[in-house]
Length: 100
Figure 1 (tube, helix red, strand yellow):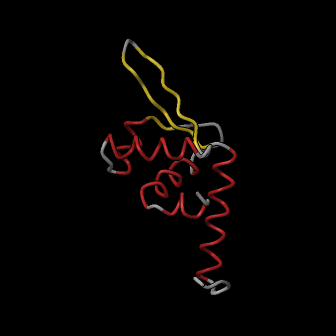
Figure 2: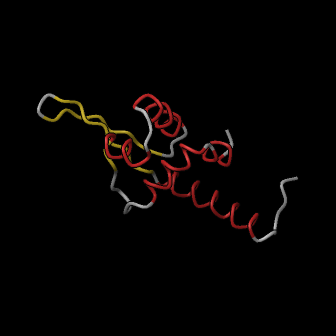
C-alpha cells in the first residue's frame, strides 16, 4: 500500500501524528494512546498492526507485575513516511499539485 493511502486513514494519521510528536526512540503505551485518540481497544490494535506491518512503528509487549503492557514507537521509516505525507498535504494546500 502506498504511503499516502496507508497514513491517510484518519485513525492511522492520528496515531502517527501522536507518535511522531514524541522524541525519537520514545514510545507511548497502549492505554495512553487509546485514551488520547479516543479509540476502542480493537480499533487501535488493528491500526497498530497495519502500521507495524508497514514498518512505520514498532510494537513492544512486555509483562510488568504479571500484567501485559504494550507500547508503540515510530520507526525512522515511519518518520520519513509521515514527513513525505505532510509534504504532499502542504503541496496540495499551496496549490502546487492537484488531485488528478
